[in-house]
Length: 407
Image (cartoon, rainbow, N blue to C red; front, side, top):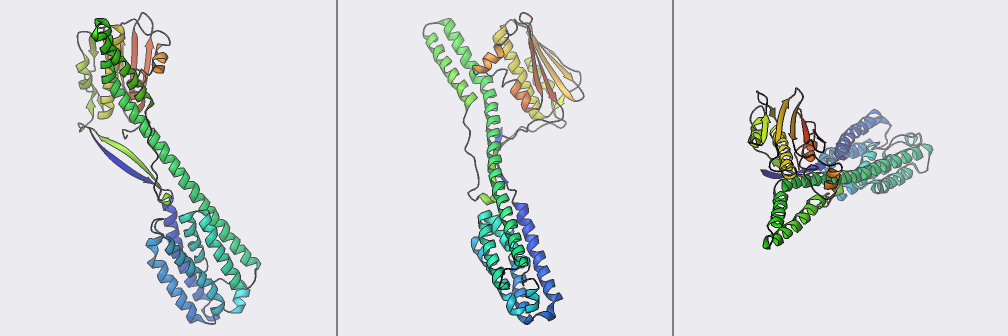
């Protein structure tokens, strides 16, 4: 089964950068229209026209610079803020005194806030505080005094930019936390899958070698003892496991990286895999297989995992009920789900034995059966009465509602 690594970049900032791009264009148009509506009141309109022309060209030419945090460099932010400050300080030279004292807008008007917001998105609230302080000083210098309107505008820019910068920092921290949580979940699911596969093969062989070596005695007993030690060590490894370190971008503003390993399963027949074809090989002189007369289609991965769970249940029958125990497999094709029941005539499971086995790291029921069904969005119910055998009922929904098979 082929595997490939899939890398996903998570960033809640990207919509904010797109909004900033639109904001800069709209506020540039607004500044031009505001000047055009009061053109006759300007003392030096030619200077204002020159500045607004530069502002328009700069805004349109630098749209790619505000498309993402990576493209928005410190040098660009410095030039952008300088252009806004120049526009504020030019206002007393080109506008009439009456308009300035009455609270008239500066040449760049509210376009200046876009420059400050770029600082907030790039570097957080500290960068926003830095940029908004320069804008505040320029506004006070332009008016010559601190008026109520000036104080109102300065405080508005300060609060808005610092708040957005703080939100961006919180979003970045949340992205890193979510990326770590997703990788822990992916690592846990992969460890559970490996544990099931190891239990179905290696651990059972080691347990058999230990048991047969003890029965034979001599040198075989020593071999069995070593196999038993390796079985315990391997069980400890697959039940504990190691979790990978969180993978986050070197530039936190670009978002968090989540890496996953996807498995390419075998090509699935049209309409799904017939579960009967996967369960039929389990039938033998000691195992009776009862199936519907029509195909029982399931998605390929779900059908294979369900068949593996049935195989694990039959392995438990042979190991705990003996080679002479009989077992029955019943497949029921319901409208919304598929039910597979595995029943045996063994001695049953003593009360508390399953919990004890899970505590010892034995994964037969916990992972090979219940773990597989949980990943498929189904359930595994086990009923056992001492002296009357054991029954395992496996239910898998036809419509996937469980976890995906991305590792």
